[in-house]
Image (cartoon, rainbow, N blue to C red; front, side):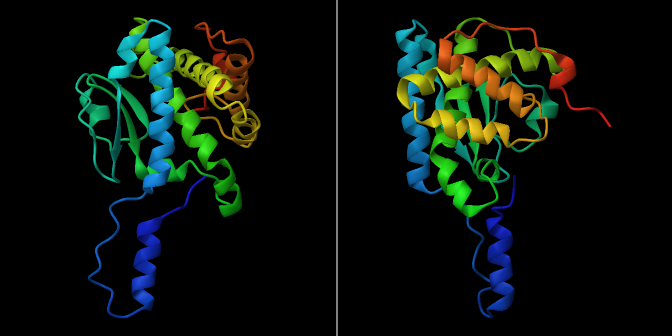
Length: 224
Ligand SMILES: [Zn+2]
């Protein structure tokens, strides 16, 4: 799942075509119409959670950052704050941060497949991140740095919340998201593709997303 490496592609073009060496690398990676998908999903999530009595969620703004930029997320440990931002939620100040390069990396390698899943994927990533805003509004504490089990509990619930919002606002995303999760052969900090799909599907089907103790054995990447 990688390799929409625009700067490399541009650099290569410049090697082949003389005279372009001074063109600056592109600084914006995600086109405006794609940002629009995210902003629209953010509005849906804010409306949904406000209707549930969690109006604080609406304070979380969407922030797009470029490759090496980072958003100053005030309450994070300095070690994580040194890294360039990925796609994530910041509790203070409340913001959903989209690193534009990381966002493109989420898309499947095949251009046809990337085109097919892009809109549902961007929408559901946004729902997921706003799920973390809802957790904060519910008073659920942020897991401590390195608390893998604690993080997974929150990630599974955020996936479930994403499914819940999809059922309300974009039910046709269901099958595409199933394909997307089930194609993930590797485990990451969110759990396996199967675990992520199960959580998402539970939210979609039942609208119930309690905090569940994860099955650590099947969720966590081996350390070697
Ligand atoms: Zn998350």
